[in-house]
Image 1 (tube, rainbow over the protein chains, first blue to last red):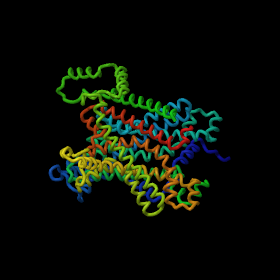
Image 2 (tube, chains in turn cyan, orange; image 1 turned 120 degrees about the vertical axis):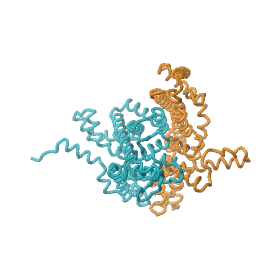
Image 3 (cartoon, rainbow over the protein chains, first blue to last red; image 1 turned 180 degrees about the vertical axis):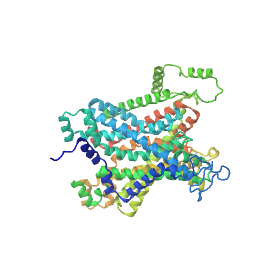
Length: 312
Length: 321
């Protein structure tokens, strides 16, 4: 007697289908793969910073002779005003920057998915009200709001910064989730589940949630890049990550305030920010193209492409 | 059309009310108040007198009603630092930010539209790929980073342009009329260029997508079948329809623009709203910091409203709905 798959096996397969990793990697371009590899590398290096870093965190090599030294064999990225090794600080700063951005976007994904799903499932006036509130949230300039909060609730601990960045970053996610959930809700398997007597909560978590994860993953990917810039910008005006902790943004802020001759102090953390953000953008673009094939440039290009696209 | 405008205006007022409410509770739930910090030799008794003077000792509900009233009257609270209603203190800065943003937005639309048409027309050639990669690169640059690099290159290494401010602080009053105009223009070049680079890199991606979306349409095929050259087909027939989503984008881009302006203004010491916020943090002028959230919200709402109206004017189908 052939055994039918268990409930958990079905759930696992539903879940696996909604994760775009496999399909994406097969179709990805070279630049996407490079960007992905660089990001993985940055995360690994940042995670292993205590093992890799040539000097200790905050270690002052020699405050008299090793101050403001340009890049050399012993100090690849040079040293700063307090004779700290900049390579070491960039590694540890990456830990702070990457984990703040990643955790913040996880918070955003969580809140945004939940809000969007509830709005889509509830429907009616609750949905209308929730969307109006969302409109109001979207009208608040995020940067000005964050500046106001960080200035007033000074000093904000790191977990507070993560929550703030996350709680001001979920609006777009919940819009996408709601739109996706509204269309999934009309599909046959949801009707089937409903006719079998599944509760609203069950439909929401077991049937809708796995099907809205793709847009969530896409917006989280681009979101992380944005949050890295945002955190760096806030640190740049002195209200983001503060000493003794330092992110790439904090280091860039210190470096840009320093004597103009010590270009290496600001250059390397600045480059780290730019490279990371660019990789996240490339990855986000690739994911979006996968999600919405109409935006694939090739499909619509030229007369032959146009004919194919309009025939579909 | 009149009904459309009225409904949108109603939405705008509701949104502004919510923004003001959020801004109020942010200030008043925060630990401490503007008088808790500062010179430690000020006695608690004096701080209490100040609190009483500015109404910080009243019940929260009363303060809330007062604040909403103040926003409705356009005063936006009272700035302890400037000893004037916040609107008065902020009034000088906002037009300068609007000037910077308006010029940058207009220029970057021009650049983005031209570049978008160029990239679509020359798609899959090396040059288009190069501009495409360049726009992705610029799009990924943090605003403060690019601003600082521009400053470093054009004001420090090659000292051809002034490093900051709106006018030459010493010589401006002694210049001829044309000299003053040139002085103002010179001070605008760096911040505007920075914003235009960032904004057009952002916009051109949408312009390209919008063009690619309309290219498969029937009217584009008929235009091609008529034997029109590719420049007319893309640059005129396709572009007119691809401009519609850009109008919406102009409204949506406002929050990002305001945020970006804060850091660009800070780097170039452009005395606008962004610089005012950063300075207000240092002087603990919290009512002003919070007011910028409300003013920023108002600008965003106004931007969206104008975009909606422009969209309805450009596309009659919207009005019928």
